Length: 208
Image 1: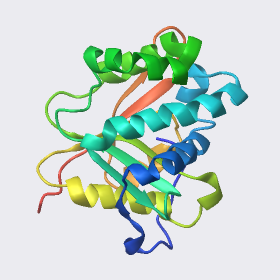
Image 2 (image 1 turned 180 degrees about the horizontal axis):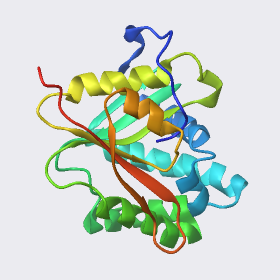
Image 3 (image 1 turned 45 degrees about the vertical axis):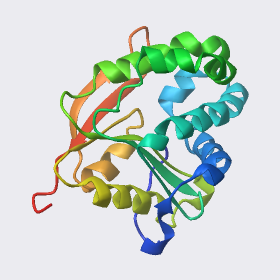
Image 4 (image 1 turned 135 degrees about the vertical axis):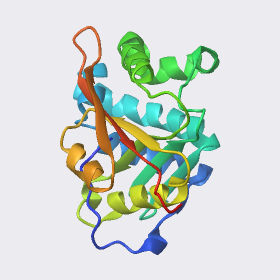
């Protein structure tokens, strides 16, 4: 998800696990990366409101994905947030536990956000898989290869016996993910006039 990314010119040493110290920078970067994302644009039609609320939303998601795998490259210029097998769906209890911060992040757009979330979870595959929940690169860092690097670094860590799964509402992302082994498994729309999404799956590496 997020901005188009390439894989050239970034050293492998640039990738590391993210911690709480990275929270604000990663949330701010993801807000810029998703500024024109069709899914986020549908939830928050007003650009100024979107810019403000996305920082809050991505900070919450950064915290929520602490149990999975959070990677950063370029000191937060690119990041991926992964959910481990069996942890892809948020679930009602987890949502209720975040009611107040979700209201602060989403405000009156909670119904639209829930429509997207419910549709995303409805179209998830069965079985166990690593879920590439979020991937983004700061538009100011495009062309340095950081986005592609951080995605590939995550795949190197999870390419064992479980497949990797993602969905994207940005059509230009399909070529990048296809080049690293993801295949489109579904094309679908959020009910109620929502955006189009593509589901993509990458099978485990055969020699892992």
